[in-house]
Amino acid sequence: MVSRLDVALDVGPTTDALTITLGASSPVPLTLPHDTYWTLGELCDEIQAQAQVEVDPAVVCQETNGVVVFSAGGADLTITWTRATLRWWLGFEATDTSSAAAAHTGTVSPSVWRAAMVWGDSRPLGWEWSVRHGSGPRGRGRMVALGQLTRMAVSARVTWSELAQARSVLALMLRGLAATWWRDQGNVFDFSTSNWRGRARVRLSPETRAYADQWRQRTPLQVMELPLELVVVPS
Amino acid sequence: MAAVTWLQGGHLIPTAIDVIELTYDPVGTPAVSSWSPVGRWDSAEELLADWMAVLEADIGPGFSAELVEDLDAHAASLKITTPGQPYNIAWGLHTGLRDYLGETAAVSGRASEAVWPGTLPATFYCRYGTPDFVRSSTGVPRTHRVRLDGSSEVLHAADVAEALEVDLGLTLRFGPDPAGAVDYQGHYQLERCISAMLDPDRGGFGVCSLWHQGAHQSSGDRWVLRLAEPVVVHPERVLGSRPDRLWDVRLSVIGEVCPW
Image (cartoon, rainbow over all chains, first blue to last red; front, side, top):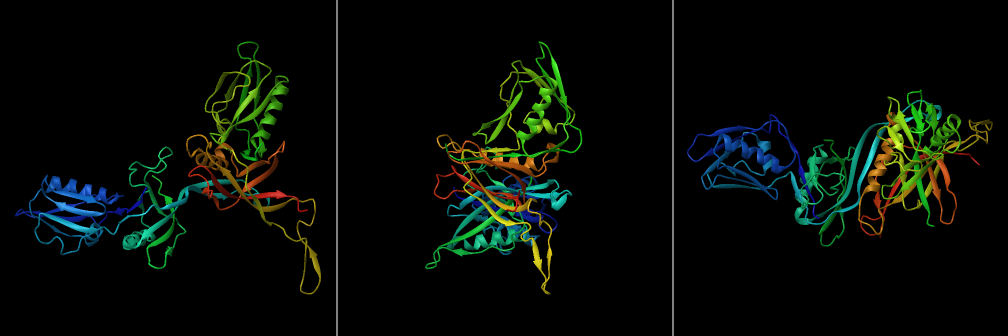
């Protein structure tokens, strides 16, 4: 049961465009619909769907383990990045795709953290209510709920090799971005009362302003623990 | 018998908007009681006792109500005992009281002593007793204060008979049947219970009654409690227990107790 976090990308004016050139054809600009793409896979699916309609049905944009690959069935492909943030999000440098090639493979997206170890979950599921008080002596008036948060607390375990990905994803989440969290990568269904270990859309809890590296073994540095307080994003 | 702890949310009806009309023996010799309650009840049992008194005044003796625990559901269901014949129940347009009692529609031809099919949302019944119930502070700690000039004054709540507010930390321990399959019904009933306690449309006003019956005790101690902020329910695994079998949840509550 290994976890994965994919930070969601809100595609807008600064992240919505790229240009694909297939062989000697004219460059074809693509514009992505402005929407929230909850996983890197969803974003790639949208790019691929656009490219197959606008450029050529053979164009493929696939994500595997956080790495994005563009290809077109062996034909040469060039990608011009109109939006630098989209390029960065997909794991490419500006020069990576400027030359024609049969496939362009990025590095692991900064929005993806695939855990190598099982995470601890001593408090896997809970709730918090925001409340309002009615009047009454010594505040004894009625208390009613205004809203409710679903909370999930985990203790993420980070190996040395995945530290950069973990910090990248947490830096994005500390900025308030939401993410898709697979408590168990093998469980591809949504979290529900009948699928307790399903994937959930989460944010860091509102009171989270920082995260703490807690090293379990100082010599050598092998495993770090990150206590994470997550809240479920209402659908 | 092991220690057990259970909880019932209170019910508040500020104005007469609910109607509960019970028809006893509807196909024989019908007798009708209609009740439109107004008031505050700190537990379901208090409200049911008042309702039974109304039934006995309107129809005759022999009515009683009991909450039957369903430990798999971590909740309780209602059972009405009549003098022998079945009964119908019609509810008014407002459904707060109906929902509070765990019913979803009109009741028709229900037999005496039949347990109602739904559970009361604002109840939490578990297989285990609370491991601790911590009194952390008292609202009014002193009865007088000494000024810098050496004189003193009597403070509010100097009356020894006046109840004081006390911050309490309550731990509930729960889990599925140790011999059965793992489920998370306890989590969901806890969420359902607190949500109902804070839902004014179902009569919730943040107050509940807690009973704790220790091992070898024949009856339980009872506290009337208010939820304290922040209202957080986040169960934690009990260290050393089998995975997903035993959980502790800490609730911050406020109780009213006599100061000494």
